[in-house]
Length: 313
Image (cartoon, rainbow, N blue to C red; front, side, top):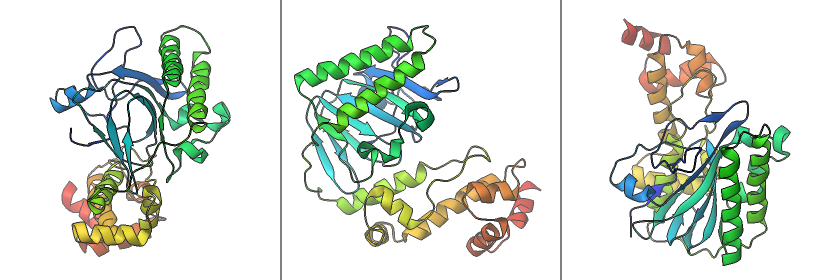
């Protein structure tokens, strides 16, 4: 069995008939349409293991993948053993570990940003769809007939992505929606009982979810999750259980770990001369500068302005 990989690797295919087996960052965005791409390769795991590729964190993107080999998906509250020919739906709001059972797996899929399927463009709200909700069952076993149908959709996606059709992005949205509705009509895959080491898995997934929010790249970017309850909800566990697990595995509470990471990012941003203290406070989810200053001083016994003066002088 191979080591578990966080679901944060994207294998890109070029907009031609030739597969590009490199991981690229950033993914090419579509003009005024959000981001969309198709990927297809059986070289992903070998390349990642050989460290010949660069991991691109798809923390803001959704993925729909057709997995043709045996694997396992480990979420905070459940483990799903995946048989060959499975369709899996991934949301950036629910981290998990994917463990392939063999050295090479053939995977086909598409990746897209939330902006690609904004309600005004698609008529749907992604996070309100059952297939992308926390606590759902996003893995579906396919029959041979279903596999052929899904493969056909991905082939049409790739063909359309390479075309010069003016409205191709609208057509690509219909293909994505077709896959989503196809998946929601299927019965959920059998789910096994949580494996041993569940506490360690919850702790690891929490840390993965925490790190997905960083770094903050510009003042317009804001943290999506700030409180212990918000993290627990995303992991589909009770906040008290999450706190207990983290205390056991790390020696720190959920709030302490969040605060520690916020301070690390705050100090990094305060070293950027083009960021105002108000920018830093807003991006890190504080209601105002006074609230941020109080938090910062509690952690470091130093006001943000005084810290900035020290490091920039």
